[in-house]
Image (cartoon, rainbow, N blue to C red; front, side):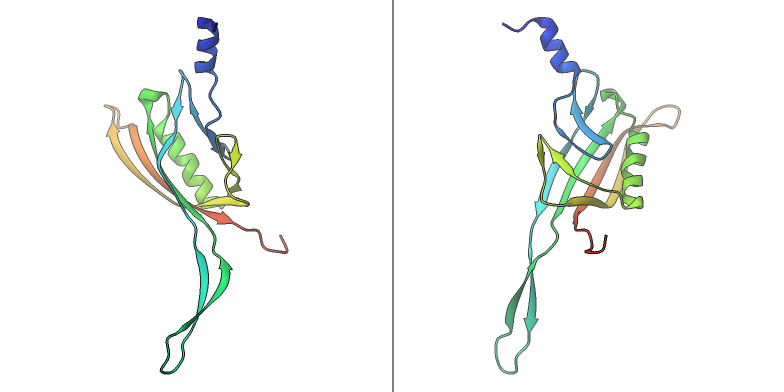
Length: 149
């Protein structure tokens, strides 16, 4: 039988929801920082050879880089500072920081990922002009290191 103290410890210590570098996805009784509308896109690359009076011929060139997008909502009501978290995500994008994307206890894909785009919407402000709720759309792309890196 699980004691109340054990249950509270489980709520206090975040479950391994995942991470991307210093951005940790967590749910605990102290903080909620998660994402929704997760989407992963995989596609192939093809060369197109135009032929006179014939249907073009496609040539398979290989896999393209994968893309992931998701939305995060930051709110002070869930013990998250929207401005700080938005700045962290934006900084990761602007510096080209490459990290593994970990969801649950599994690494996503075979390579590192980079944030290629961040768009923020401030949804609510407090009486002091501070953002208390914001929504951030994140787009990531698989990062395959060059041969000489």
